[in-house]
Image 1 (cartoon, helix red, strand yellow):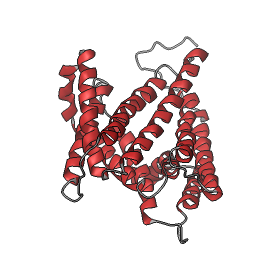
Image 2 (spheres, rainbow, N blue to C red):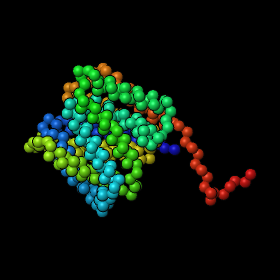
Image 3 (tube, rainbow, N blue to C red):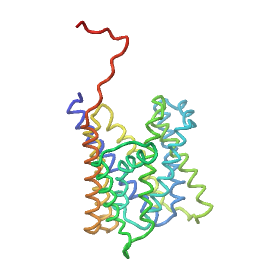
Image 4 (spheres, helix red, strand yellow):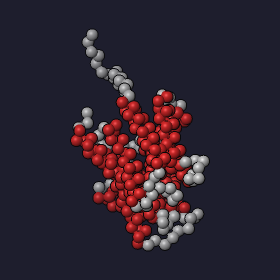
Length: 303
């Protein structure tokens, strides 16, 4: 049984973490006005890695950096680097509100992948939720219309990568500190960025761009720490739905910072995606769990 106070704390942390992630996206879009995606990834990765090293030193976990070369940690970091590169590239041509909303199909993409690759069985109700979610994506990207841009499909690819990333994350040993996983992610992302310099023309950095990148580094680390803390000692079924605060925050930032308010069709698509995700989470969390099998060593009760 989770204490109500713990759940309230977790809800506030999740809202804060999701909002900070949206702020990170806004910093990236601002930086894109001056430098290409690969340069953002490289410079932001350097800044984040240095900040994380300082945090690891402060917590006395420098020795744990050796776990950064663990196969699963590196695989997770590679997936996250691809997520960052594709998402930053996508928001060069679309609003952060639309891109963030499309990312919310990640849980639905996880279910679809489980069926396609692991022969899992899900009910027709879940399949309906998956279809509704992807209809919402279609309403945002608007294929077949003059408003369609093929780059708008990148967040959909990112959603599937996020599903893979989360699958790997759940299999990283508990002995690996979260800061080390985040540090490995920053380092691999930095490597991806420098690799991208071979195909993109980098630009000189001014103080304004450096400020955007520094803000992006801080918000990236803060978002990870807050969302991880949100689930500690709380009921996940209560906390998880508040991840959708990122969509609300992204819509607000798009309107205020970039003067780009989603049209009514896109807003309806966002609503469908969130409704499908909330329906899936509610029914998954409320489904009866199988009773644990009694241990063979457990003494039998007298008849």
